[in-house]
Image (tube, rainbow, N blue to C red; front, side, top):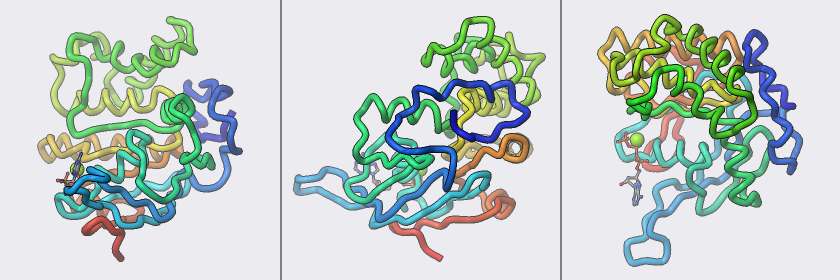
Length: 252
Ligand SMILES: Nc1ncnc2c1ncn2[C@@H]1O[C@H](COP(=O)(O)OP(=O)(O)OP(=O)(O)O)[C@@H](O)[C@H]1O
Ligand SMILES: [Mg+2]
């Protein structure tokens, strides 16, 4: 059981017993990167390094904006932090787990238990209801009985103000509502860290503000750490801290 802080959440009972047993978790930073580099097309004539040695630490409960010009490496960095891609060099710790030596099964388990994702395009399953979409990460993990998953999904949708719409098909919801369903889904496994890649990039100003405030509320209520890629400086300034990436390096 990690000390992932979500005191008021029904999801606090999420079993963490089968998380990788390679290092203690629950103490120290949620995330640490040391000298992370990423090259594409390694070993070919078009090899290119896009991340040039990133050092970054996120403490528990931080709400951080990741900004930088288009092509500077923000999504590449987020994919590495989210264990969707591996660095070419350097080290990455998630909740104290050093990841370079972990095999695919442990990486998958660590990702499932420690990290939630919100993307620019919500990637909801349009033919499923909001409730069914929020249940998906729990279904993939198969740790809860069906009624428990439904109850948790209902409570998470309630937290993002969507309980009355829980039986709506995702396809019939507005862009802002769909992103709030995606936030509820990202919370399903009580992750310590939520990674959001331009979560408001597709929304009008009012919906963007609502989605941002919803993430802020989750951060305050659960102590969940957020790393949010955004091109919106007005929203970035409302975060605790801004990390700027330029040409594959953290600046400032
Ligand atoms: N699979 C890939 N193969 C080769 N190059 C890639 C690959 N993915 C990304 N790149 C390159 O890596 C660099 C960083 O891309 P990345 O998508 O991380 O930028 P970004 O900061 O997220 O940009 P944006 O703000 O436009 O989303 C770019 O030059 C891009 O072309
Ligand atoms: Mg990007």
